[in-house]
Length: 333
Image (cartoon, rainbow, N blue to C red; front, side, top):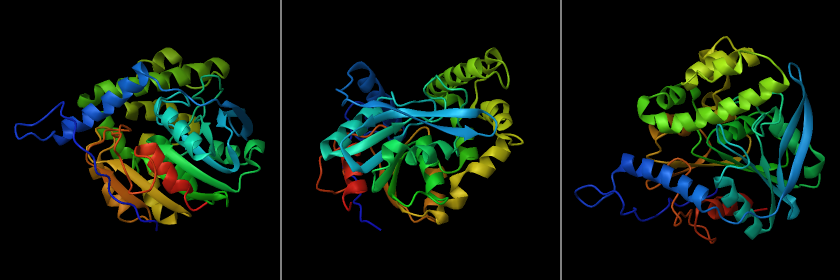
């Protein structure tokens, strides 16, 4: 397993305890929201990409488009990045991934989870790997000799699920950022009142995806009924479980949670987590990591997908989450 050094960074002075130290849970919220607003209000220049599209045949939905965008650099080395729940390839944190790939001279595919492009006839769940498999088998990646997976939040869960189940032999490493591992407890935590601001944002994205899919293939409850759902467990009960043949949300969580399968991971992996992540709590993740072959780094300063500029894995690469993680992914290729 590749060695990684725990990150060292300096607490932000914006919210301090009486003793002068930033309170952990508060820091987690601050460093979740602050990077999000920074990316939204002051977006960085995005490297030029081209549209990506391939197709697969789904037993229920028929022909499904698998979409994304492709950064063409070294065709032999490709990083495939997967966004978080309710997001898409337009999510701001993926710009940082593109910029890091551009700087390293490796190609990158930003992959939409099914329906995230708002132009599809179907939507995804947290263990759906068929679209990732189709993307890796596409013409665009036919020249790739070394493939690396980078998953953010639920995208990390999808990447790990794929890595545990006969992955493409060209996949060398998987790195995941703030990924949940056990879906039931994560859903219960996410449904707590204190996370209303985050849940509302994620649910808005899921509702947009569902409505767009319903307009192309009316299936399931009406969009106006879906828009009345305000809890993720209820969403999974009423939307996800019926579509994918699960009995209910509990059946879905038990069937698809990667936590029970981590020992089957076929490639080298890295888990980067935020100790005070308000959305994916460390206490829910740590017990499962102990049973895995993942290298693990916890950052005490970060929020959910919000890491400080000084983040380091101890690698000889520019500081920051994406430059360090991508350097870890491709350094032996």
